[in-house]
Length: 77
Image (tube, rainbow, N blue to C red; front, side):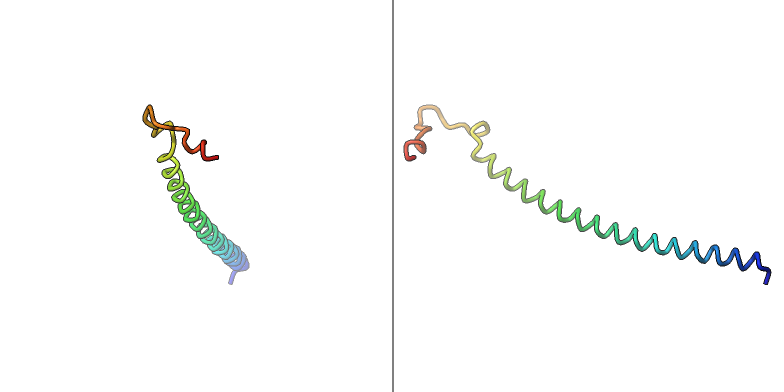
């Protein structure tokens, strides 16, 4: 074979190997990103549940009716 053809073949073999390695690293990185995304989504769901519970007792959203003993819990302290 012509030495130029062998050089070109080696060059493209090395290039394809580098591309395969990059693809493998890209797949690993995407898997890690997906895992992190799932963790973040789970934590965000838990945070939204906590916020919903706090909104129930938020005096701005649910003020006490006028005339009630709104400080009754302070009397127990």
